[in-house]
Length: 270
Image (cartoon, rainbow, N blue to C red; front, side, top):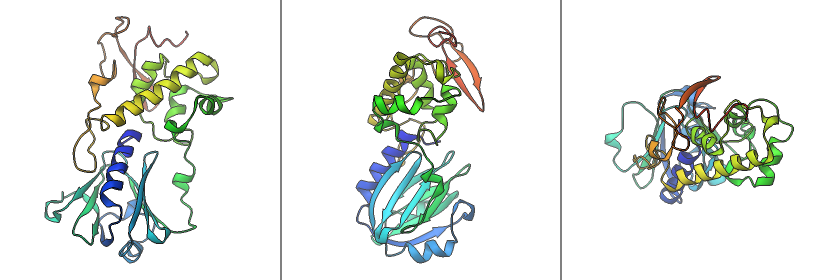
């Protein structure tokens, strides 16, 4: 599933490539990903110009003329790829946006995902309830975000209503660098641990963005990024040895997800 780094990279590529282009035609092949009838997309989007493209957590926001917004969430395994030759589109294409110059982009979805159109003064509950951008949070803001919170730290960070854009891929390295057990209760975190966590979030996400995001997700031009397992110290290496202390890496369940931890560097009871 594309997480914040992938969405940032794709959005920046779309901004550079699509800004100023005018929509000529829209084709929809899967209705359940929409928030309104297909006829609305076909009627409203043509002749609209792309004004800007910005990331918003795991959503991409395409701002169009006349204050319409196209909001896209690629869900699990989805891709959004730019093209100049429409003849080479994959069979699992779910939507196509074509521009007046003959270029365009297609969207493929594997498991859920959304392709929404929102007009001026229209609400969009799925994005309006999201938490703050982790890269915009100062230390003070982050401390305030955790203040008086209950529950465990990993589920809290994965809950998009608390903080948007972090998923189960990058959380592996974030918690390892912060030396935090994923199931640590938030009230037990010390000031130093909160500071390490804030720094880890910033460093991991910024590093991934600088490298073009993950090496298993495709960007807007169909290429993969450079952030992979070589940039993650213990993630997805069960029974390997921690590079810091030599302890064997464990894979533990964390609700509906799993986490790779070093029991020595990430103790549940520090």
